[in-house]
Amino acid sequence: MVEYCKEYSEFEMMLIVAAREIKDGDVVFNAFQWPFLAVYMAFKLHAPNISMVFETGTCHDYMDVNKMPFSLVDPVIPPTATFIGDSLDSLAFLQRGDIDIALLAASILDKYGNCNTTVIGDYNKPIIRLPGGGGATDIAVLAKRIVWLLDEHSKRRLVNKVDFITDLGHFNGADSRFKAGFTTTKGPDAIITPLCTLRFDPDTKEAYLAALHPGVKVEQVKQKTGWDLKVADDVEQNAPPTLEEIEVCRRTMKDAMEQFYILKPEWTKYIK
Amino acid sequence: MKMEDKSMSMAEAVKKFVKEGDLVFLAGFGNCMTYSAGHELIRQKKRKLQVTKAAGGILFDQLIGANVTNHIITSHCWNGVGPQPAWNYRRATEKGVPAPLFYNEQSLFGLNMSYFAGYMNIPFMPIRSLIGTNIFNTPKEAGIKAAVMKSPFSEEEICVVPAIKPDVGFIHVQRVDEEGNAQMWGIIGDSKFGINACKKIIVIAEEIVDRFVISESPEKTMVVGFRVDAIVHEPWGGHPGGVQGFYYTDLKYIDAYSKETETLEDWEKWLDKWVLGVSDRKEYLKILGVERMEQLRARSLIKGAVNYGY
Image (tube, rainbow over all chains, first blue to last red; front, side, top):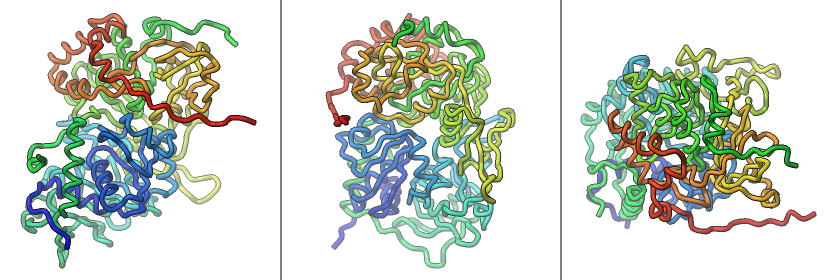
């Protein structure tokens, strides 16, 4: 019988649900920040046969590292690589359609899964200037399946319409993404937040509430979402973390903190 | 074949090859970052440079804060450790301090393809992303950043991005011979195509080696000698970034950087301590200290020897 963990943080739940999206054998495009941790957890838990492709140009079938890479450019990564090329090589794999799934960390998302990583406020008079999309702009339209990770479920992070599309999701909904020329990739499949999993309506391509994390109420999610969120008729419940999942998750987070990942205290309060 | 002595100090190389208004490529994708070149650009008070690399990071942050550049062409500018903000970048884009910053924002793929087109000496390259995003045509002042054209060979429509040919490029590598054959290993990222797109090339190296060392593993050569204009021997020039086989990334230093530069006053102190207050990389390393350098020094992990016989 599977044993479940009773006390865990919302952030841990987000990482674990994200890791579950990776299937064993997938070719995964491994992106910066939280996605890296989730893919690492999937590899340790249920997906030891994944292939990992990094935007730096390296590929891996195994990650035998004595410390958590602080980012994709950590010198601990190359010695275990099966391939080291240029960034263009990794981007070629993407463009060829070789990548099954990419998890991506989102800054601001709208109801069609478009992401803004460029600017908060007016483009010419920004309140906050964000870093820019990096590889996510390309990954978002070239990987077969995209899962967004959003580390805060709030109205400022989940908006009706983004001011600036840095990474294209389902564009203006319905078949607009397809008509824009992206005919071979499906675009965003899910948004995973600390509260729930959102998925996209197959016709309208609008994000709806598909599954709740344990203990979270529908109303709570609706109140924290920046548009009138539709709810599936049969909202699923995401299973709580198993003891094995939480152990791997906490070890991963602890290793990450030692490598200077900035994790908020409320995310790590159960880590000893 | 040795025609001329290409070796010089960083100060001489920057003085000789970088002119006001130049577009400068700075190689390194985490591994083999060109920090020592960036610091010399600051010390020589170069102004109005355009700078480009795939991920600007805190190197671009420093060039922005020191007013060396007010025009960046990149896909990302942040502190990769944490990750946390690059404060000079934010001050410049949000408040115009020390000067308004023009950010020609690209995607990673778009930028790499632009370098590739520059390297190939062709006007543009097609890519299957960018369409539908605001990066495609923002900011307007950047001119035509990308376009959509019909393939001459099918009914397919495809996005194209223009060639980028920087005036001058700096690349930090593990080793180079006296002709300039420059070898890098570990993470390459945008370094190979970016540097080869440049009109003038300056190689910075941890070690100067004999020609026969280069031909032991010629596949590691990123830039071939005949393309190289200057060679700078600068051990630890990549700090605080890592250099595979030489030293690990100085995470403590890079983490502290964001905290030490959050205010303008603190940034000026930082700049004075690490850049303006020292005359070259050797003096910088004295401040860093032997103890820290020993902590960062890479352990030995020798890999790979193949039979090239025939």
